[in-house]
Amino acid sequence: MRDVLLRLDRWITGLALNAACLLLAVVSVLGLWQVVARFVLSQPSTWTEEALRRLLIWCVMLGVVAAFRHGALVSVDLMLRLSRGAFRRFVSHVITWTSLAFLAVLVWFGSNLAWRVRFQSFAAMDEISMAWAYAALPVGALLSMVAVLAQHVDRRNTELETAQ
Image (cartoon, rainbow, N blue to C red; front, side, top):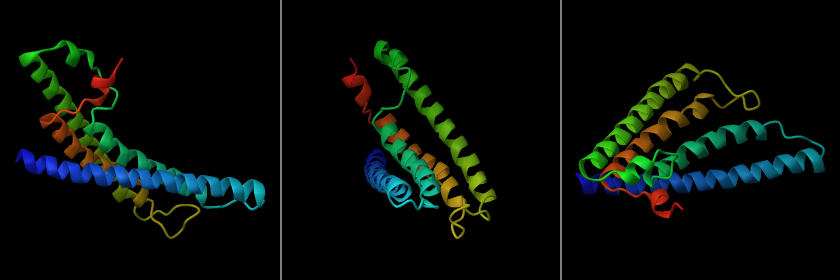
């Protein structure tokens, strides 16, 4: 079971990180286009700012998957540094279950929110439903749950190991 979880995690984390990097590149290009259109062409783009906001949300929610997996999120790591044996395992379990509970709340309320706004559309992009933007919350949280479980069974505390 552990090997299946770690294989699934490698696939999901790699996919999420690549997608987040791609979205960051798209956001950069759109941001550049917005500046050029406004200040060089004197014809401000009507849709780029709205697209930038929504794509940044997706970028963050996909990037947090890799952050969870590598132990790179802000945490109270003093307890992990100082603890040994059974207490360290206890602290690790508390961190894992707290993270999973938080992500479950994001899945629940994010799904509910995406469902409620499914008939609304973006102001500048009439044909796209607002649900696509809000879907980043439950999707990112679900993918992060796999990363949290993988982090629990195979710790990669990149931040703890490189901290000064």
